[in-house]
Image 1 (cartoon, one colour):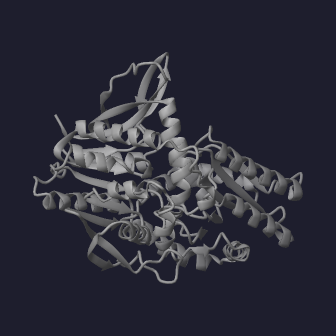
Image 2 (tube, helix red, strand yellow):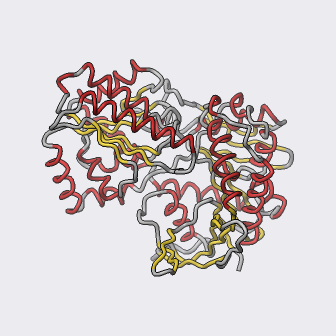
Image 3 (cartoon, one colour):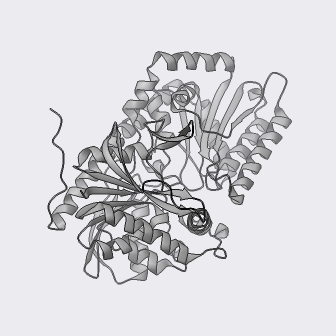
Length: 506
């Protein structure tokens, strides 16, 4: 039986764990995150499928079932595992996606490396993803493709499944036209995205950048432009955008454009925050701090995340504020996502070097200024650290959204704590009551952390109440409902039968 909804994402929707020589497929440890969120959509359709890659060694046949049926809390769905060799993954993902496309998406033109790119392999892998999705999909299915490393899949899918409703969601920023057009494959990429029925982004600025890039390359007709809704359109911010082009026509294809930021599972985080186990962990953290103020900063190890700039600002804070010596601690979680990539190894070395220098300069027998963690902290523990933190400090130079800041707000059921965030993260347009900073300016960075540390409990409460209201409004349920609503509209526009919804639980 073919599927009504096919999700195409590079990661598998479970964890593979080997037990006594047998591989078991286990649900993701945390229900908070993009994979569990996407799986929740399978509960809205009669039948769903997921397409992902699974690594095989070069020269060896894939000794697993290509398609497996999974039964978990989200229902029954099929997973099509695309067998990719180590060479294909290295070329398609680590080189082309991370060394050529990622820097351009984040407007780091100086980090862009065209030399090692093998574009035919990128095309080949995207074709294989599209082929696997087409095999799973009903003729008029929703095929939902995720993120830039699958930019070319919609073009192939449109050829294979002309009546399918193809949707694409961009989890990264989308750059301005002059930056995007640095890519020598810009026409092919854009033509593929314009084969979609719906292209989604986190915030209006990225959607408008996409529309402007399309207009710079092709003869497209703007059919609709609307004002941005309240809560997503603050003026005067780096990523402010008062209007959004919501519909283009390219050749015979109507391309709907939307901005709907992914939310966090606020109800789940609040549930953790109220657990007795969390209270015990919080008390343990406070005992260990012994009255010291805690600042937390959490990010993947990446040159776009601004961790280096944040650490340098912390060093300047300790230089000018002798009164903080022995009374503050910075907890940095810098998770290395790609162990084998030289660029991320270099970033991690820089971070470790800075932490070592700062601890060496200012540390005492009874006080270590910075604690550095290189592996992810479980959500249950993280909520307790968020509750203990006087400040959450996140300063990416560019970020598609950033869910950490939303998780911090969700965890603060006490309505306390100060949030310092970069103007250049997508979530900033939703959280104007955070302390906003410009990570490209030392003066702005230093002023922001000073403001956060000096904020009164009354001001913290006023700001946190407003931020929690936004995080609650634009939670993961809102994102899911909005997405399903758009899918329904696509069904009508394609003149096929609407996507088959399960009846609501009685």
